[in-house]
Length: 161
Ligand code: SME
Image (cartoon, rainbow, N blue to C red; front, side):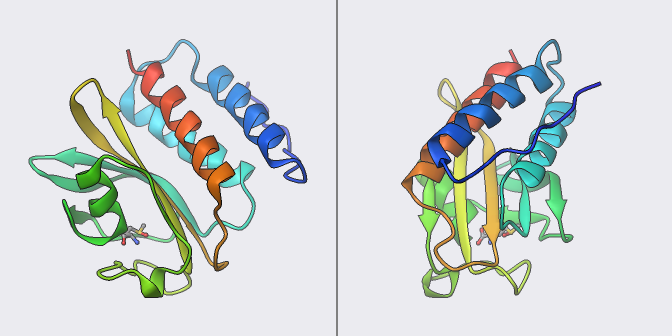
């Protein structure tokens, strides 16, 4: 049985290294997309402080469709180029939004959300989807979170092949 240890975010880079190691151990030996996405969302949800949503959207027939997540029920379909998720997916670049109210076209799945970090999942030339994290705290995410979550997304992607 996998046991998640509490990570101390007083040292953020160290905390992300610890989470990355936990995620590698959690996903080892399993390649199933839904299973690994579900466990990744859960590990992030329990590992990172101050989140109100953590999960995946996967690209299906040209739009993003809700995947495994933790948090309140969310919007199911997001067009490429729409909202924070669709914009990050379209640009294939992670997007850190300090104040979602100031982001044109932000899609409010949960009115409590104030800041957001979206990491696109790209395999070779193919866009697989996005990893999306929301927080009720304004400016919750910084560049260390961006780098840390990009690393978690790479570990998730690597587990699939
Ligand atoms: N806020 C996102 C939509 C997804 S939910 O936050 C889970 C967006 O603007 O794309």
